Length: 118
Image 1: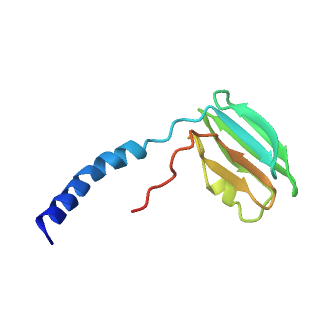
Image 2: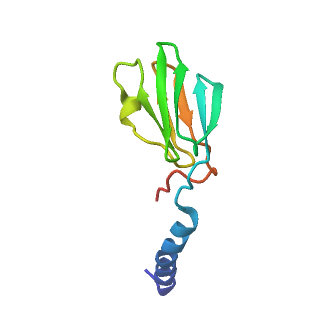
Image 3: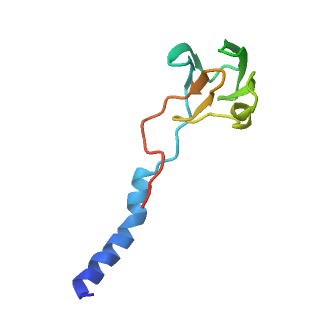
């Protein structure tokens, strides 16, 4: 390894934290939520108003709750209840779905990176 290789490696390692901070920004809080049945938009609601929502899916009614700027599935007719266990969504880019019932919720984000791999 030559001296130039060592300098290049050291410069790369020292710049890595700055590149990471530039591209990995904390997710911004979401302002609205989109509720979809399949690929069809059912409703778009603000997250700043607490409310309970019922959405008819292919198996039955899914119940959603908006509280403190976040949303979650509270009940759904699916068997595994994975959609309920996912918990609260509140940041741009968050997504959850009850696949058996065909209902999904997404919070539009700024289109940033989900992850960075090296």
